[in-house]
Image (cartoon, rainbow, N blue to C red; front, top):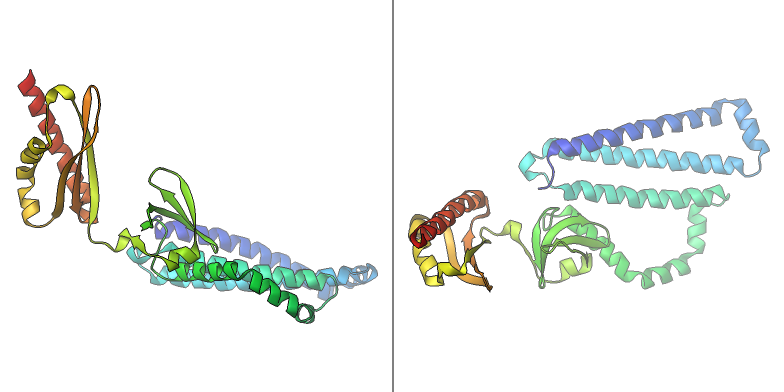
Length: 296
């Protein structure tokens, strides 16, 4: 999980303040349009202005209702979920749904501003809408799959995943793509259709992970793979016996003119990584100091 509950609460407080401002603007405009004779007379004298005011009231009113529903849903979710079970996907999902609804409201308000009725106008464009739906089929399915990803626990922001031969951390989920930051720092945009339509490994659901330890030694140390394994393995005997370490592989990572790079891969439970990393660092330092002492 990338962020704590307090971070989301702070974001919701900011959104609530914006909601209050929109509510005050709506109430002021509503009262002017229904109580102030001078304002009513002024809008009636301007051609088309009354349609614009009606459209603006509709836009603000609908936006306030959508925002209120989103705020209530988010607060209920944050109140019920514990810190360790909090996933930002749900909040991301309701934000995207509110954005979609607000887009529909905005288009409807724009139609109303021209003195047209949204339902009748959209009905007259049924054939065009059907053609657009066929052409944009992939976009629609991508959007649906994006919402599925947001409202399920299959993937979450911060998860490390592997899709085909690409591995990285999920940085964002949009209606069209899942944004993946690869191990080399590059960012990939993966279509949501592909995320749900192909084999994906989510390391959050695995009880084991491979951890690499890289270290280099001067070439005059003349250390071999067998020697390194024989020096380290006895120090890990308890963990290997208890299966805390399920994999222990020593290999080369590169041979250079003045040094040799080694790589050790161990399979461990993710929650034990900090502890075992610290132990491995101590073991490797001890091994290198011992080898250096023999050469002096």
